[in-house]
Length: 320
Image 1 (cartoon, rainbow, N blue to C red):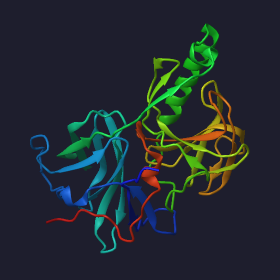
Image 2 (image 1 turned 120 degrees about the vertical axis):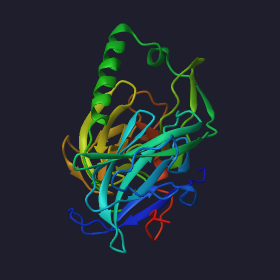
Image 3 (image 1 turned 90 degrees about the vertical axis):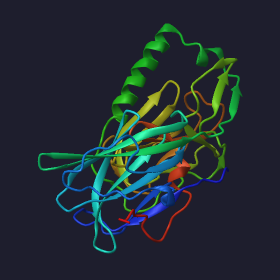
């Protein structure tokens, strides 16, 4: 498995239902980020005037923003995606807002603006950051599959388009605040293919790159929830077979496909490590495996960016 460059932030969160400290899996180059300080009357400067940070295609960045107590509704905007933030207090009693920024696997390499807006009463204040998107070296995968699974009949095409609309609707659902209380875990033990981001050529035809990770395991192996959340929908789709989508809050959704069995129901609350299904080969699959995907506010990110490393202390940007 390729080494992941992921860090964990550990936060104390008051005023919400969880009892334990919140662990957020993320990647951030803390030494390259300038401090954020939202002051009354502060206007937006030129693009990138307030700092800079970077991330690799497919990675997740944790952004913590110290703000004054009266601030409300802190939101980020990056390449057309909206990034929700939520409030918490740090170990020193300071007040911050926290957001998870996903770098999509196809976000263009180069520098792009991350715009942060805060509302306090009727006043809107903005800060602008430059985000350097670093290209990832994704492999090319060539597959040979039955023609009926690649060249769709008119009937199957209608089905696939309806399923795509359903998935889009599910992934657009936003639950305010995180639903988890601990770090994320791998959903199944098996052989990791390193498939995230692979550019696929199927029967000689270029296809969309692989947006999740494939983990091979024996038929019927237990699949568990990567973290606490709500099952938004269970499916049996043409390409992905039997599967389900879990909403973890903050626009973060996990997906589990090609299952032989789904063991949870729509709307069910699940806990980290709870068995939710079993490995199978349903849909378009060449053998038993789990396709595990993560979407973060529309960005297709590497699932292992949430699981590989953790830190014992919070990552927080302080005033300098």
